[in-house]
Image (cartoon, rainbow, N blue to C red; front, side, top):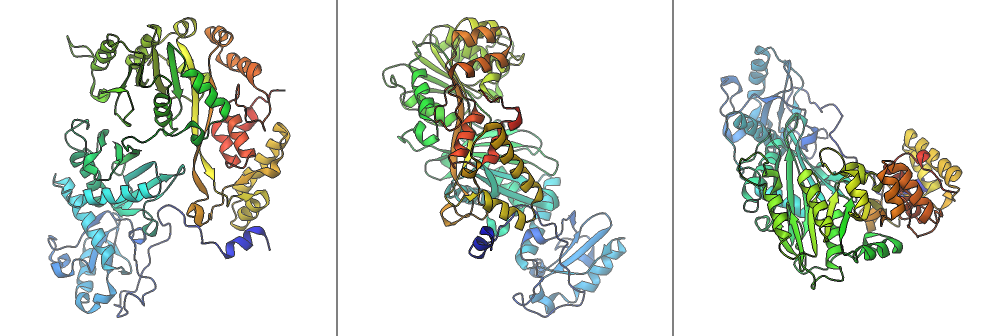
Length: 592
């Protein structure tokens, strides 16, 4: 028996994420007298119900043949699936009460030119959710809506996500009148309620978003008075959420089926100690480099990475463990203020609402930065560099003899200068490379950290064969061959995420996140080459000067983020498939 076969006996089955692709379960038009418990094809969850275009029956239906008494509105329903088809669903436990309505409703639907399939059996809970969602859709078209219950649902979802250690919660309207609620745990999205696959009605999720934005937002933090399906919305949610030490950064965006919101979960316990760099997963050599960066007297400290790469957490640690924290004048300009920083004067400027076109008025963000230059600063955290105003602020603070701290969205340290000289940011290569503006630069990412139940090579192969995942098996085999041939490493030590997991990781296969990074204290040699515009050559020569060229070595000086990932894969800390996040392994130049 294979390793996988043995483990399968004692492990719970894998549950996928997503809507059902199975056809709706049907029942003969003849009414059943079976109880709910005895009916094997009863629709018990919303995802099993057909996608719907419109609810045709109801208490207030304009068609007398489709009008239902209020006492039966949760036991029988007629739904238009598309322009040509309709279906009737009913609760089999209420057969005697609704049997008189079925032939009449069927005739009325056919009179409208709709094909009527076999009646469906559904629980009253599902019928109610379908009905309420349809009523909400009708109300939204007439301009009426209610957020009753939305706030409670939103809080419930957030509590579940916090307990699961999630970093974000996604709420969206999807096809078929449904809403989907997922949370990001250890880098992957999973349903906020596994038993119902994260599915709610579109009415539920939309009301939750409205309640979060309109009723829970911190004072003056939302970028509009009322929630809109058609615009980008953003706000901070704190005290009104009612969950101790938890804040949310709420953002929403329009979509084809309806809006989607993402709320970043921020832990804001007052007096909480910053996360140590070691706990983040950084190597000793990288921590040493960060400590050297804290000693810089002037220049810019730039931490780059994609959204959700831990930049804000790392910045908090960098500032609060700074040797002069408490004896130096430190300021931070933020939109929004995500974490309260010890011994830092924090200023909130809502940059989303700023305009550069108001005659006779100076941009508020620039005004704050200029005023800070008269406040005897030692360090100014200018926040995220995302436009010409913030880019110029970062450079001016650094060139004026102070330390500026900033975050930037880019894909590597080699792309930082190119990003800053983009016309949208507006800095010049000459000022960045000739005036010692760049004091420290880094790129970081977060990867799922393997649980101790991780699979060895033979086990992952057994599993992929047993589950007929031929493409994934081919990819794993090719990755192993490339690593053995190109990197000349022992692939026998590699470990892979166990899709079935274990109780320790709550069947996820991962336990938390770990950071990988590439860091540089720019020297004259790198600046000289970078000034010519050849960033690739500058990065290569930096690697040649500082790297020990050993994939098994924990020394990350002169090494790229992909090399840090390779090291952690060889140590059994991360799945080697994460290596491809930073580009094809075939393109990595292996230094001899």
